[in-house]
Amino acid sequence: MIYERLLGAQFKKLHPKLQHRYTLPLNKPFYAEGVMHKIEQGIVLFKPFFHITKQMQFLFPEVGDNIPFTLKNTYVINEQGEHLITFERKFYFPTATRSFYSAMRIDLEHNRALDTFGKPALVSAELDFKVTKDGSLITKSGVQSLIVPYAEIPLPSMLSTRGQSIDGYDEEREAFTIEVTNYNPVVGRIVNYLGEYWA
Image (cartoon, rainbow, N blue to C red; front, side, top):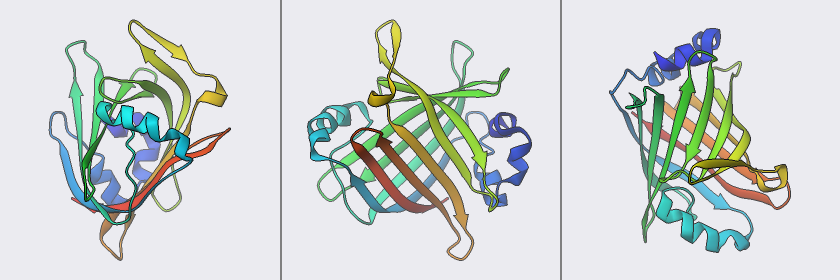
């Protein structure tokens, strides 16, 4: 179980439903459907950038409430022997369907993870994991780089985003929950969303 190796002793502190959700056997995708109750963005200056990155399955210009979405997570080992978990989400806005793609590369020897965002990959970020007292999983982004042909360029703090996702389980609603926030220390919020899903 890839997440159990990545999280170590923390894995057993996850809510039982999240332990099951993050078992992720090799080459057996996890599928789910849900609704994003809120998708919102920051300053309008980013709109032109979002229109470019929507083609890369990264960021997109649409916002809204109660947007249906699907997700698919898959644990694979690629031809280079790298352990990867791919994250694919589709958001079904009234006027367009938008996609988000990331691939998390896992160094099992050192229990480290590096996430790359977009297809082709545009940005990479080191990840840090923490399990909360209520059994939720918090994932935070660390040092980031811009991916260019044959190289990765470290991004200074003022050009980086601070990303955090909180994955939990609501026993009353019998639903998985997700809350994602991304902001830049200079310009503020980039994009946030909050929702729930069922597998």
